Amino acid sequence: MLYELLSAIGVYGVYERWLKEQIGSKPKPGHIGVITDGNRRWAKQHDMILWEGHKEGADRVEDFLGWCMELGIKTVTLYSFSTENFKRDEREVQELMRLFEKTLEDVKVADYIHKNRVRIRALGRTGMLPQRIQDLIREVEEATKEYDSYYLNIAIAYGGRAEIVDATRMIAAEVMNGEVRPEDIDEEVIEAHLYTAHLPQPDPDLVIRTSGESRLSNFLVWQSAYSELFLVDVYWPAFRKIDLMRAIRSYQQRSRRYGK
Image (cartoon, rainbow, N blue to C red; front, side):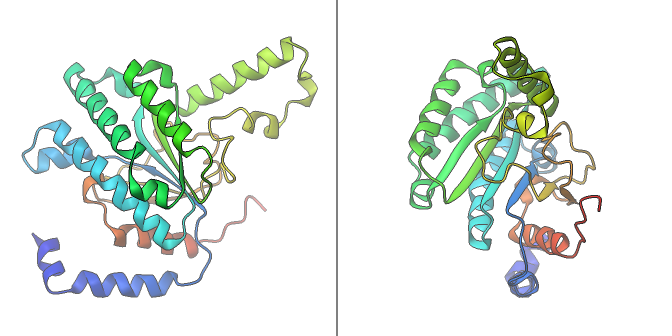
């Protein structure tokens, strides 16, 4: 109610313009990771069934990507479904899979994706997903593989520890085949085998978590070692452009020393 009232009298418009001036031409994060938390709690707050909250959250993704492109953010990684989420109620998981399927079908032909040359990749153990979703992921990745203006990564059936395990297995196989010597394994070799290896900037400068929680929840465990964290006490379906700009302003105000 307060948000609608303030919007009606133009306060949020004024605040948005002021924030835009604040972040101005200062260096902005090149890669933002987002833990999109709070869909179910938002639905409960609005007397909706759980998966309606997930649908609202999915609708927010297009808005968020548009804001990032407007502000010059080249890479976005969204944490949409973890390996642990498979343990949720069976009906909820089924509804989520239907939502992922519809979203991928829409994205495959979306004008804003192709017009802005957004390369899309799914990060995770996608073999755990229903076959139809696996097929759609391949189709979307194939349709956007030549794009390099922006990068949208969807972490689905994803776990940061699982990612490191998968990378380790690939490196171990290469050692056994004589392609890599154990003494040559370093950070660069490991990074080349992570899900994010295709990105020009694999590590996020900034990780945003919605819903007020203050943990990474197994998101980009390796890549976020030096990421700045911004916690916002807003559920993901209610996330606004001003929340993104506040996060960017906070990032700009921090001193990034990388341990020096």
